[in-house]
Amino acid sequence: MKAYQPLVGEIARTMRPGTILDLPSGHGWLRAQIAIPDVAIDGIDLYEGRPAGYRNFLQRDLEDGVPDDLGSYDMIVSCEGIEHIANPGLFLKSARKHLRPGGMIVVTTPNTWHPAARLKYLSRGFFPGFPSLAGKIQPGTHMHIMPWSWPQLYLHLKLAGFSDIQLHPCVEDERTHFFEKLIALPMKSYCRRNERKARSNEERDYWRTASEPGSLYARRLVVSARNPD
Image 1 (tube, one colour):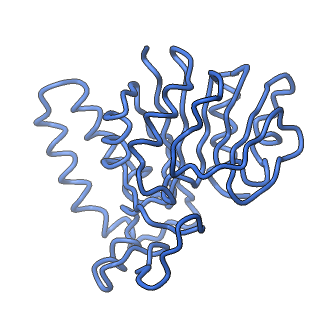
Image 2 (cartoon, one colour; image 1 turned 45 degrees about the vertical axis):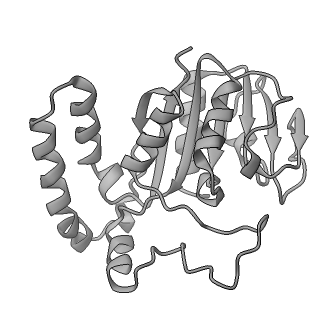
Image 3 (cartoon, rainbow, N blue to C red; image 1 turned 90 degrees about the vertical axis):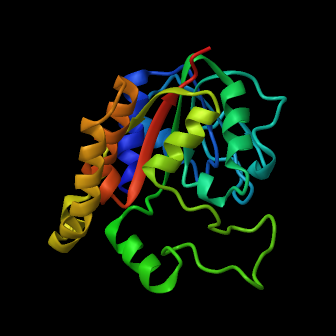
């Protein structure tokens, strides 16, 4: 089980949605993880088939956004998908169109602010899991092409029209080494300074979140946001 999966399940159980769109749905782990028997889950995936227990399923490439012919949902879950999409703005805007007013989107993705990721970028110029794809670019394949951090994900969700953007810490204490916390100290100090200088509650909350362990050295980002319409 991936560390983000029980956290996503907990978020869903707290919200208690009646309908969920899971994209990419993979093998359908979300159905068992949320443990809400009466929820209707629809799935979209390019590589896998229809998961057991899912109401509807489409095999589509999310590079073109969420299909227009789908209905509205209380919740959209996109785990480990947005890093494969070259046009995340289109994806997020199209996802918001399928959320009911007050509906929630949950996005998980590798965190490139993680100290080991930043060290590898410093030495090689590439984040782990995001290698050079020269000579390997094949549209429609399972490529990691878009690295993410809390600031980038916040920015794209905001540009797509979402509100109430929150980071849910996914820190695996047994995998967090002391040297990683040391490496994160200068960035933590920088974020705290900006938090003190913030001129609005939104800016203050943004920098406070950026200085937290879930942003600085968690290996996965788990971020939720609301459709304000």
